[in-house]
Amino acid sequence: MTLPAKPSTESTKNRALHRYMEEIAEVHRLQPVVAAPAKKPHKLRNLVLFATVLVSALYVLCSPLVAKDFYYKLLFPAAPYPLGYYDHNIVNGIVAKDVFFKTADNQLLHGWYFLKPGTKSLLLMHHGNGANVSILQFYAELALSSNASIFLYDYEGYGRSAGTPSIEGLGRDSNAAFEYMIEKENWKPSQIVNMGLSLGTGVASELSEKKNCAGTILIAPFTSIRRVSAGVLPFLSLYPDFLWAEHDLGSRNFISGKHHPVLILHGDGDQLVPFQNALDLKNMSSSPLELVKLNCGHNNFGDDREIMEASIKKFLTKVSRN
Image (cartoon, rainbow, N blue to C red; front, side, top):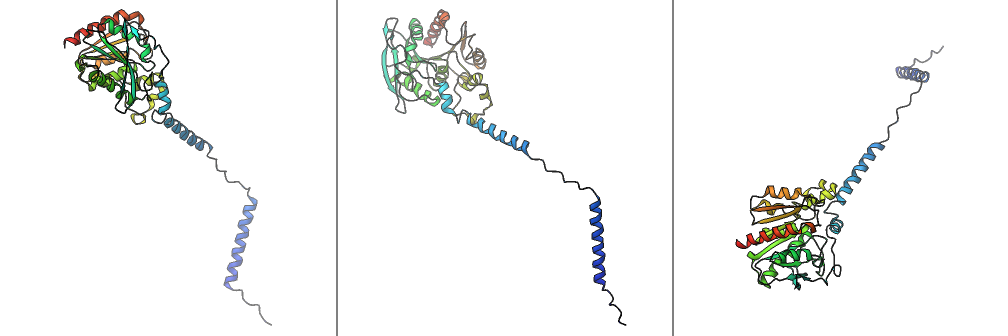
């Protein structure tokens, strides 16, 4: 009789492994199946990321640097010719002389020149952002009644002046007006008083900082155009210097340094350029500066005309002696 072959060690190991796997499978069949927890979608994180990108983009797009053209439309609501009162060119019996002159970049500007015979002082008027020479008769009357001549001129893009207004352009315009009065009308720098109104106070201050003139009159001045802008549009205070298109126009740098005599006229009811600006300028000045508080708002100076005229006349008498 033939005996069965002895199973190999390898076959025994395979059968043992097979039985072990069957036992493991049986255990798993008897236990309830628990599904693995589903991964939570990252909707909230994606939403936060999208909102951050959107806000950052809007922040940059609304900055004064990127949206300069939009802000310039607000800052320079230019009144071009023929808007205004160009037929009202006679003040206190003196007929305005139409003057045309060019800037350093060859832009042709226009002005009205009221020459009062025998006067020793010339007021060079730098007007506000919503005016042109044809609506400044009030200031011409102030000058002539104060025994001074006056030159009113328009910035680029205003009145009959060519070009487009800009902060940098204001400096070129004012410099051209100053030089014209010296070269063509024979005034000496020591006879010229820069007089600025509102936006024009920044222009007058920067010109006075560069030129050796007799004095400066600031009507409703501001320390910084960025400060005033943020008062009107508060979100502008969020922007650092590098996100502004041009330099910070204002009277702060001029007043805080050494300067010739300055007269400030400012209404305590001014809502556009608060009276605090005048107080701040006075406090930062270490040179001669007189502050006269008016009982009015930003542009309605009519009720304070006598105070303004007396103050200007007194100031002109003082600087003409220097």
